[in-house]
Length: 125
Image (cartoon, rainbow, N blue to C red; front, side, top):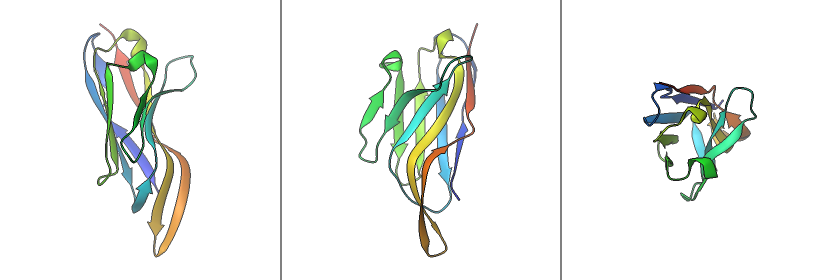
């Protein structure tokens, strides 16, 4: 089995920063794209940023220049540095892996669209 576990959310004042972390657990062989999504109250879940196994990144226009995604292939982790936070950034942030290949015994399995449980970021004075 594969799980994604996020950490690092919390309450922060406007203009503040946080670092969100996500770690994949299990006997991971490879992960294709890792990403952060967010879902604000009453809104649909949206892509914030993603990074592929080659290090190429994509950001939502609303976070460009403020958020930075980074990945450690060896540790199977992905972080999101969030700076210059605004009240409209308040949301539950979710980690996602689009395709995970993992070992169970001597067999290799593939899981698609794996999600973490989410971590809440609240931006408020």
